[in-house]
Length: 141
Image 1 (cartoon, rainbow, N blue to C red):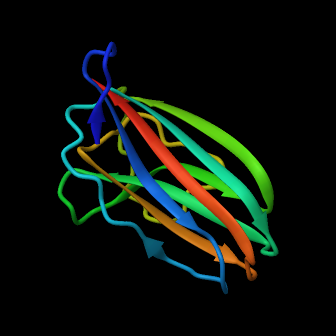
Image 2 (cartoon, rainbow, N blue to C red):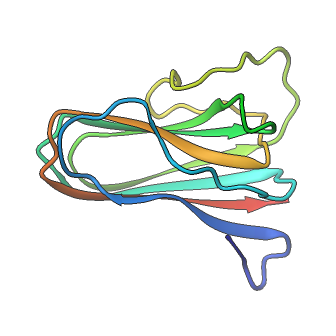
């Protein structure tokens, strides 16, 4: 995680960066990015490059405040090719948002909550023969 020059209280961090080859996987999680300070806004960018051969690849960004109970906040769904997608999330008031893990609809977001830790829950269908995926966050307090 790095603070950005010229953007007060903004931090950029990588949530996922990997080649995506091989047989289908389900229910995989990345190592959590910890200690993202008091975020009020989170911009997420997911970029796929050269995905070939598979059927679908789904990446759900999750947050927590206790390291045990993860909640879906943003979903990125891809199939093949090269493309980029963005999601912008902001802390806002909400009532009775249920904790969920790995069930957020494709390309959807849950506004309102940003914990101090983030990770990616992901799965693929089909066998990918090539491609890379990078998911980056920019948090601002």
